[in-house]
Length: 238
Image 1: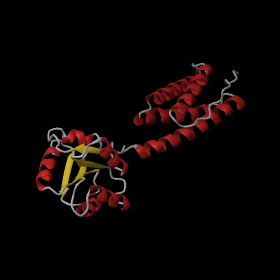
Image 2 (image 1 turned 120 degrees about the horizontal axis):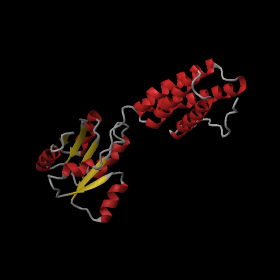
Image 3 (image 1 turned 90 degrees about the vertical axis):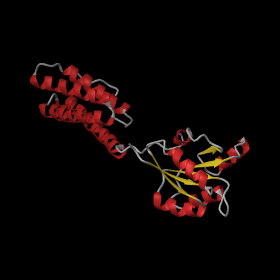
Image 4 (image 1 turned 180 degrees about the horizontal axis):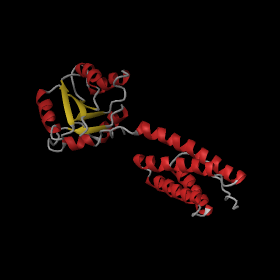
């Protein structure tokens, strides 16, 4: 379960109570309420909410003015804001969105569906593997360059067992890691190449299989979104 922190801002205590109960129907939501725009500024900086549900009509500092101040603070500049208002004519809704709100929820609202309505505006959780997946993509790029170099060596100096074994090592590593990051086809292509290289080294597999599967792996590496130096020409057959 992923906790979603919500800051609700409304000057009416009764509305704050109902909203807190309504949003509590979603087990992922953790709600903190406050009664003014100024209070919201201080709490938002401390809470780092995932989304702010902000009343439009409030004394002293109304919703649009609060949003403007939120956008001026680096700590809250990117927090999504959803306005709540009884004025939901198209012109007013467009105006509120133009101020930077991601959405507008109408008052009065249905307490049973408020949580579902707000969830549509919650940004997807950051992928915890995003950094590692990006690093893996750079690794695929480097491996593709190395495999292309090894393929050139096979053409230039013959079917060296050392070069073939280096290709096998790269293919083995890719077959194990690719599936973790969601690249099942890449994993399969690498495993197929590893099997072909092992067969050629043992002397019971045709070199044509190695050449064909090496090309297939390089193509799959390119398909995974990283530039791979895939040559258009076929290997020479010795």
